[in-house]
Amino acid sequence: MTWFVYMLRCRDGSLYTGITTDLRRRIAAHRAGKGSRYTRSRLPVRLVYRERRATLGGALKREAAIKRLSPTAKRRLVRKSEGG
Image: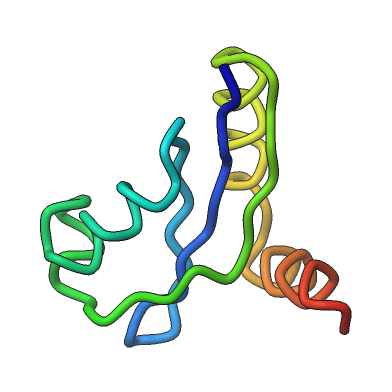
């Protein structure tokens, strides 16, 4: 099973990080206000970063690592993934 670690940019400019096995379904849930309490109050959201992991453990570790990054480092990661 493939896991995705993803980041969403919220309306207020903040970044939300999560994991899922079905990225399309999860993004749709966030956009419908059913994804998480955090994003529900910051709609709309836009997918700005994603990466694949082979295992749940790998996805959880990567999610935790991203969440520990400074806001500047998170923005740098997003820019790098967008080719900038």
